[in-house]
Length: 451
Image (cartoon, rainbow, N blue to C red; front, side, top):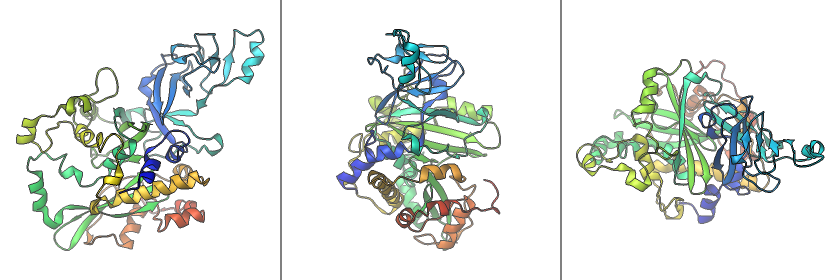
């Protein structure tokens, strides 16, 4: 459980809050590229981190993320004319480019001079992996773009969409690396608890993980019944990028990115990508049309077809006869468990955590330390490290069995870090205080084949 004070720190992300400022030190996805598909197309209104913003694509195809109100007298730029490399306010004709510069002020006699003194709020924005990424923090702390494996891939190698969830970002993010829920809510067996009990000691386990320079190594294990266990690792990249528990196989990787809309809602960017080949027509058809890995959207927005207002289209007959949950879409099964955990913002003072929740505890502690350090004036180094080291989030395959135990031996922990080209940080607080995070990040593993 968390204290109310610590829970507030992690869940509140408006500008000026500790966690909100952590998010603003990173490049984060804010839109899908398809929302502003063509040069000079209509702009789009959206909300991220408690801020109302406007996205548009100019005549040259560049994307802009700006304040939605004209700085003259607050008129909405959404109704403006997007043309000739800028968006022009309908009220008095002031025009702004994607960088926020005022390029025309026609209602003022000396507008050619006055325009050079006027700007609107504009956040640096780029496109990668079918998403528009923005940096919303102080200019002097802007890091280079992160080195995600799905960046700079050909367009045909990626598929991404997004969903609006009616809950705080953290409970959705923590659901992505909850290792034991899959045996229940995602089970196709009505008697899932019986099946889990039958596993005995072979039940999947979450072992204590460890800090890495850019996030947390989440460790899972399955006992094999012969005194050994099979171990796997997943690197969660802070603040909120996580490979979900299941990918698509056959060289296709997955990522969930959770971005706060405000404290009670979040954007779920759901990505599939292949590093070495285009996605096949069959794979794209399954993502777009089968309604399982990706729920269908409501026709007028980004909410899933099965949502809180219609009880996620739960089928009690299906639940009784054919599945544990009675919910058809994989993603819908998760949403039903996430959007109301004592409300849209989980009250973690009421929790009763158990051994499989160890990774949740460890990551909360790291995020709290980052947020509190930033509130005390100590800037995070992690956003810069994302650009300077490889980002591998999943092992290509489980390791050979190791002796069974309730924790990971140091040799295996180092092996996982080595394979994934990262480093194990024994004491994050110490590494932060003595500025040695970059030393860990600068380790190279030249003998490791590219994942």
